[in-house]
Every structure is written in C-alpha cells, then in structure tokens.
Length: 367
Image 1 (tube, rainbow, N blue to C red):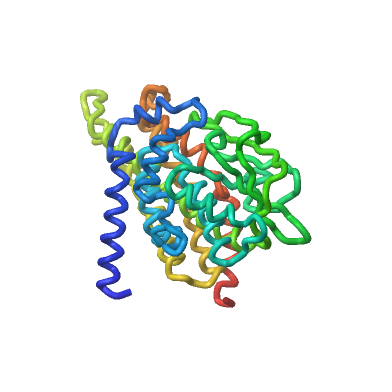
Image 2: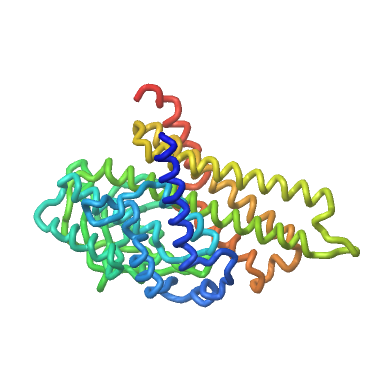
C-alpha cells in the first residue's frame, strides 16, 4: 500500500470514528442506554434513522447498490466506538442482511420475486426498514442447515424488524426467503444486558434467491469480525473506567492505583486490550486486501477468538478492581460486563472460533 493510500485510509478511519460521536459521545453518560434496558424492541428507532442518515447502514454496501463501498476496516472502527458506548441498535445484524441482499443483487441470484431484494435493501439504507437474518438453529454455532420450519434463534432487536431473511435448504442448496415481520410467529426473551432475543418460527415468505451458501458464509465471517470490534470497544472503555477509578479511589489513606499488585493487574488488562486491537485491525486489513478465503477466515476467527476471550477477562477483572461498588447496578462498569456476557458468544464464542482457526490455518498455503 502506498503512503498516499495509507493516508487516505487513516483519514477515512478518523472520519468514521468522529461520526460515531453523534450517537456515542466519547466518555458520555449511559443514560440513554439505561433507559432502553428491558424495553421492546430494546433500541431507539429514531437513533436508527440517524444511523442511516449518517450512512452507517450502507457503509460496506457497494456503491453500485447504493452504499458507501467502504471496507471492514472502516466498519470495525465504527463498531469499536459503538461498543465503547454500549450502543444497542442492531447495526451488526442489519449489516449481515445488507451484505446478503447486496450480494444477491451483485451476483444476479435473484429469481421471480427477487425484486424485493433491491427494494428492501434501499429501504434499509434510508432507515425505513430493518431486515434481520434468521439463520441460527442452535447455540454457539455458525452452521446454517436451513432446516425448513425449524425455529431460528437469538435474533437481537427482532421486535423492531420489518422483514426477516430466512435461509432454507432446498435440494441440497440454501435458498433465501423474505418474510414480512407483521404477523410473524415470534417469541421474545430478555437478555442479561437488558435487551431481548427473538425466536422466529418461519412460515411462508417469498423466495428471493437460490444457492446463497458461499454468500452467507462470508457474511457471517464479516459479522464475526464486526462483533469482535464491538467487543474491543466494550473492553477498552471498561478498562478506561477502571483505570480512572484506580487513580481516584483512596483506601488506607492512599490512592489504590499506587498499590503495586493492582498496577500489575491493570498492566495485564492493558495488554489484553492491545492484543485484541492488533488482531481485529489485522483481520480487517486482511479481509480488505482480498486474500484467499481460508486466509480470510483464519484471520477473522483469530480476532473473534481473542475478543470473546479477552472481553470476559477484562470486564470481570474490572468489576473486581472496583470492589463492592462494581457489583451495584448503579455503577456503569456492571453494564459492560453484562454486555460482554451477551455478545461474547454471538457469531461464535472463543472455543468455536479457535476450532475454526485451526481448521483454516493449516490449509492457508494450499489456497
């Protein structure tokens, strides 16, 4: 990459991070996040419209399909900022759907009824629609069997969706159906962070594409990396809050941050955050470089494994370093642990991603 290209990418990333301040001000209060807890759909539709106006819903959608045509590096930079602010709007899961819809259009996979793909994609880009992909049939799995009629699990923000995209196995291939959310058989359950998951029992819908197997694999990898970036933001802010606490809290007449044992623990947490950032940024750069599929998957799996593992370590240690106050609902640090507990296993937890890395890594040189 040339210096000019590097400068352009750095400026792009800076602008993306700056734009996040409109929704998640750096170091801002979490009043909005607290107010949305245990409400349905668990996010603010007005804020969702603002995100669309900022171009976030189409950030990685190709320009030919109406998006910005940016890469995963930019998307991950944005998600890191949103993770730091615990932003609940389902941008990652919406991006999974826009990736599918844009891919369907770009690869001419549309069939009779496929015109809906373009219409719904356009509506998602302007914020008037929210299509969520109902793909998961069992916990902590990235397999998409597409079993006809089987319940689709763990759909965040499902109560706010206007459409559902449902992969269905037909004749040994995955077809993609679109189902209107109105009247859908949807069951909602609360999550530990105050959000909710939906379980959809799909019925009917319009078939909009055939043979999306490779497309949804790539889309799920992208969502895994975006989730890793969000978790990076969660742990980075949790660490910053904890560091500030160590610098101000007094015990036995001394600032507790002067105690060497606590300094060592804080240093260990800083290392975890830094290693996660390096993994996420490297994976995004690898994906944007257009490398072979196995190398791409290995880089993403490594980043998600590290993020899922580190976010639990950092947020749990943050609670301990805060002492008793960390366990109270009134202190913000607890919100970060709850978010980590909910999101660490989304799109594959640490153990699953480690297996995916090991499966892809030995064969990278064969591509």
